[in-house]
Amino acid sequence: MNIVFLDFDGVINTPTGYDVNGSFRDNFNSVRDGRVNNYNAVKLVNRLCLENDLSIVVTSKSGWRYSFRKDDKGNYTINNYKRILYDSGIDEHAFIYSHTPATDFSKDMEIKIFLEKHKDIDKFIILDDSREEFSYELSQFLVLCDTNRGFTEREYKKAVELMHNQPNIKRGNSYKDR
Image 1 (cartoon, one colour):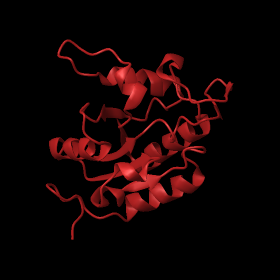
Image 2 (cartoon, one colour):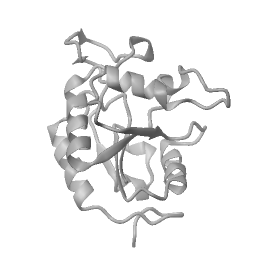
Image 3 (cartoon, one colour):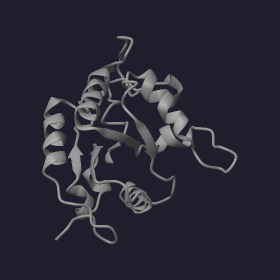
Image 4 (cartoon, one colour):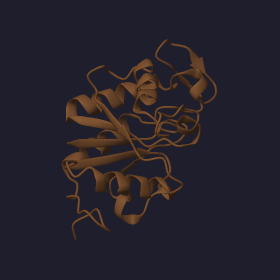
């Protein structure tokens, strides 16, 4: 399985944008809006997933995660993210697989935990707007987006290249073969 770890804010939700209904927003959307606001970025994520057989794992924290209801075991459910992503224009054929665990750790550590628990992942990329969130090992899988523009054609090309020319995942303390 191939994965795209997807952050919302700064990637598919930007300070300004047009959402799936064509409505212009001059601020980030929030969970209360029920969708993200950068439909152009969403369309590119669709293309990335469908053309490269990628499944989505959501890494968003902040209000996107902590505003959701939990299941009877106290876990955040993937259905919350699916509703927002599909309502935002993610193609019904794009598989929204999961989300990283909700911890007090960094995104970097949450992705490492996820990778350790999901040995069936062959390749992955990370779409995020914050380089500081990631260790050296995971930054090699990062496609860095500009917070104001989100995921654009430029980042799309980098993501495709990274999917085709990335190091193999080494489980354990490092995620890159040396």
